[in-house]
Image 1 (cartoon, helix red, strand yellow):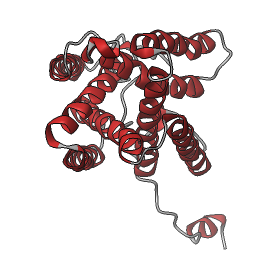
Image 2 (cartoon, rainbow, N blue to C red):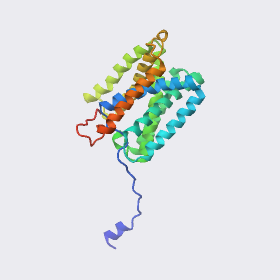
Image 3 (spheres, rainbow, N blue to C red):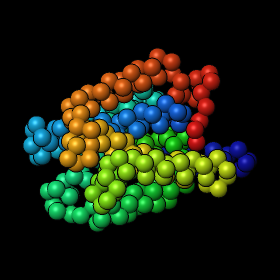
Length: 268
């Protein structure tokens, strides 16, 4: 029997069905929209809870999240509007998840913050054990995409709890903005000078953008008695939504957030 026959007789292993990478390149536009979505999700969640009541708001947010992720998973390549719609819905629902624990169940932010951190760590452990990478530049299979969105949801819930924790323990909303602005510079500088790998730097910064954007939006929307500017939840939500639509529309047309776009450069 020849070597060719031996090879031909080996069991056929089904190929892994790969797609084009389903997430955008990490450029400056990525971080701008990420911060905008976190802030918009924070105020939109609070606005919906006020207008509809907590239970209907959570139900509506959950349905919108499932619908947006269904569209995202159905696509076989990155599409700007679908991806960022899913991120917005994760932001809204992640905020609701953290708020339900605190307001509805009475769980202190000092407890929910480390709890969400543990959930995120568990997602990363399972993801790495399965795929041997946490890089967002390789989200080309359904399983990796599922791990990616599980991590994104956990980061939003963690960031919401962490932002509310600092805002209610002496920093206030503006102080939290300053704190998390400084915090997000740490992984960026560590990566820039070779002290932190790209994957670790990305996910660290990704977590911090949530409390940064949420604290900024809360500071703009909430009343002066709570340390805010008093602009109102509806106006801030609308303004940040318009900004998101503008940036996502620009990227959809120019495709500057894809690896094939001329002049695109990764931030991580």
